[in-house]
Length: 286
Image 1 (tube, rainbow, N blue to C red):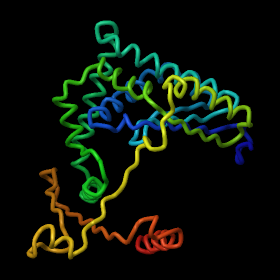
Image 2: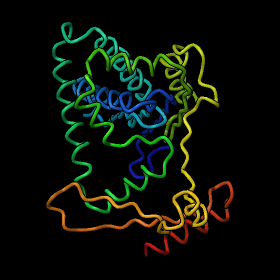
Image 3: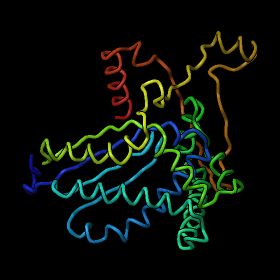
Image 4: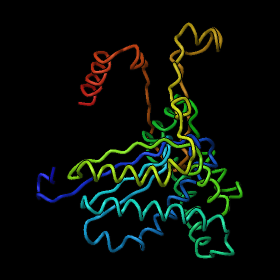
């Protein structure tokens, strides 16, 4: 269907390339983030004309893989997808050739490495409530990398342009699963064309698709009950358990407390229990 406000034939297409290799280590995640920033620089000149006519795109790397988003006129979305994904693959090859072959890429790589390093350091200097929320999630989430690990890689990890290309090559050349969603004015044939481009560019190149058992799965740890805590930490331990962390900013005078109550999982609560929990959260915020 057309855009309901201006009656313009526009489409939004989401492509998720599922891969466990993006988040397999702090080094891999850091290199993928640098690649994404360099790619953004490259696409600014590549796609400048397309932005003037209302087309836009974004590429992000997260825990589950690579997410690509495209917005604009439905008939141009397949072309935009083809251009962006083609530049992704050629950029990987250029990075693998090293700084001697592509000195401008080396300068961009170093610029974005320093920018991401500065942003990572500053993330722990934010408002106390945001820092408390981050530490809480890092403590409870299984397999979550801490920002300190990213900083170590960015500072002393010996990151190179060729290493960045090699890391992304392992993602794109490894086993992938692709999920595509088209919304808006795209017809059946247009949506299939987007799927064909993704399959040809990535899924077929990876030889075998990613199996369900290989997909990244992220879980939360179960917090110990009072009885379990005393058995683990001794009878004199304080309960509820508390993690205290001093603010990184020397000028920060404010404090924040994040209190976590675990009442079950989606599996045990089922739909009714989950909906009740969400409702209680909304009532608490209001």
